[in-house]
Length: 166
Image (cartoon, rainbow, N blue to C red):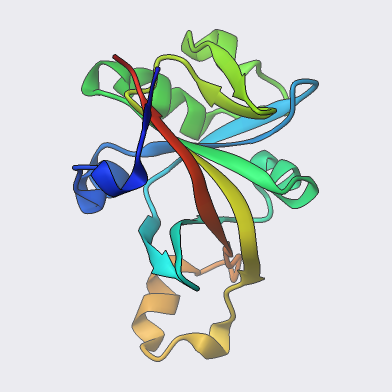
């Protein structure tokens, strides 16, 4: 992996996150879990380079996000579409996702990430909060995305390291 200066990233987050998807991975060298995500954001807040992800509380990864202070966002080329689909549809509670998806978990200063990823962002949590129904200015957005009232928790993390496969 080649360490990157975050300022040198040349990618479109709209494509990377919503079209190509990403894996959100949290935990430690003892136990971790990953999930596929297609919602998120990147930008600057509080004078820090940040990445934001959203996780519903019923997802197994939620437990790991709540316990730790760090997580990774891993992006893959199209040849990994089946692996990302499996990681999004299968629960880590009863499946070893790494083995089933054919992915190799590695650790950067204790933070899990995947060696096969083309781009890895290591994040340190700065802020987290549940979305609330009354926060939606447009009720149609809430109704379309939360018919079961199972709102996501938002995590804003400072990007503390970025690297790509060489």
